[in-house]
Image (cartoon, rainbow, N blue to C red; front, top):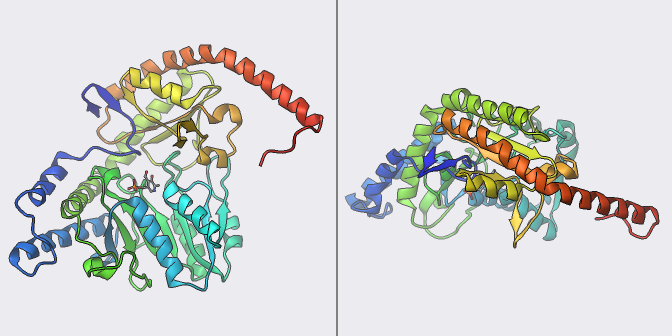
Length: 411
Ligand code: PLP
């Protein structure tokens, strides 16, 4: 998709709101301003639209009953509600199982809970970003309150075998939460056919608006209220509903379901074309997680010895929007925790970028990116030659210091 003159390859960060979605929302921001809890017809008309949106979201994730869908304010809230809800429902269990590659919405919360005294088992991944299911089996105990594992990774696109994982977790009678924020709208999801108890999605990742998400809670799973107040969302998540957002998300979910096959067809073909061409034209380039089943729209590419941020700046100057695989904090960029968990060698770690497509990207755009990238990479590799020499020198000095026993191992 071209925004003005930009080429937008950052669809895992967010997507554009479809015109049909905007039009569906519009009346709820203008004339249909009733409160869905009101008894009068002005309110009940709005309540009916929320009901229809719930049906559409339920259909998109393969839920058999729309009451299993609870609207939230975003994916982060859904993840927090699921994890905190299960801990509250099972207060005698103090153990959580999750992975080292989760989004901060899960990872940050689990780190916080660890500080509060919960025990967290962090499952590792191999060099391709895949879990070892035996490690998962070994981690489960009768103290485990829940397992929280993402469906697809936001940085690499690697898809976890959720059905198989669910069977393992279910056999132990433990609730299973899945963060499907990146998977929704890109690959088929069916909670009906999968042993998943709770599942998070977020509207803005599939051409819906920002500020609205949904948490699926399987019927029969005890789920204490997350936000306490009024009776909205069956008293589980109180507060007057974000009506326009919910209606927009429902419309986006309906459209996404209709167009799902374009991802395994057109979008994947464009992504593969992009990767093949970059690997041929750019020296020292690798696709992270390439050996695994991945989201059809996502490509995480490392350029050896380079800095992802520098690549992005030059891409931006050429009108191409992408992102790094790393989280930036307070002006300093940290290498991605996902790529570190995949044991990516240090010289490949910093130079990772993520290109994430949508069904609105075109072959022309891919061709343009493939034309521009070799010169961007060449320019930066030229600039980094000096840095490389400096780094090698520093490394050999450090090695000598370690050998001399003057410094210990880094924590
Ligand atoms: N989980 C995953 C895997 C994500 O990629 C994101 C957002 O990027 C989130 C959760 C958080 O979603 P939101 O931005 O709606 O809070």
